[in-house]
Amino acid sequence: MSTIRKNPAGPAAGSTSVPRRRLLPSERERMILEGSVRFFSEHGLDGQLRDLARGLGITHTLLYHYFPTKQALIERVYSELFEGRWQPGWDSLLDDKTLDVETKLTRFYTEYAKIILERDWVRVFIFSGLSDRYITERYFSMLGERLFPRLVRESRRYRGQKNRGKPTARELELLMGLHGGIFYMGMRRWVYGHVADDGKTAAFDEVFIHDRVRGYLLSLDEVMGINRTPGKACVPGADVSIFKKKPLASSRKRARPASQSAKETLS
Image (cartoon, rainbow, N blue to C red; front, side):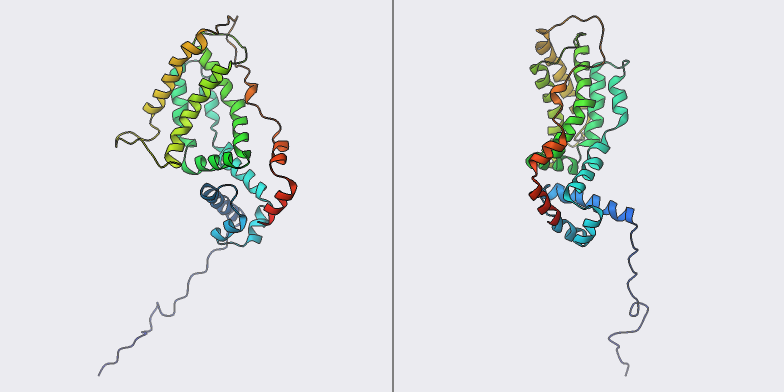
């Protein structure tokens, strides 16, 4: 009579799990950074570092080794997720005098939406605005230097204006309506979970972007039509100092007292 062996010997029986490869410091840092972006996009910037470490499967001490403070981690998140996504080619595109304004703005915002407005970017940006606004203020400060002056210049070029005066409140409000409308496309998708989908057109398709750009340019007739200022030559940019914030270090200090920062280091 044959005997059935319940635990037959074989290659699988004596096998052992392959030890995990030890990550290089640069790989570990990258893993922590990418995990932090996901964590903050889900729990906001007020999420606790102990919870982050637990989710990453590492000790709080190891997390502290790579990022001594929560602020240091947020700085890296901003550098990677926000500042690092701005494409140098966009400056050249907006300065290209061979393109008409409508084509230029449509092309820029189509690329901008596809690269910038992804899930983690939008959600972290929103959470920052609901927290201490550190990331949002830094980002708008960058846009105030690299984007908004160019948009004011191109808008005036579209209207045939050559003045270099400070933009009016109506100009700025209309401009922020264009930029905010593009951003809202991402917010509606990644915050509200709503996408206008006809099954044929991508979320950030050029046709949607062009509709917003076209509507903006048509509105310039009324906004700028009553503010014509003759000029001798077309100037490279306009004064949009209104977008520039006070030194970020001081504003960050007011937003987060030393006692609170110390607590976050241990959170």
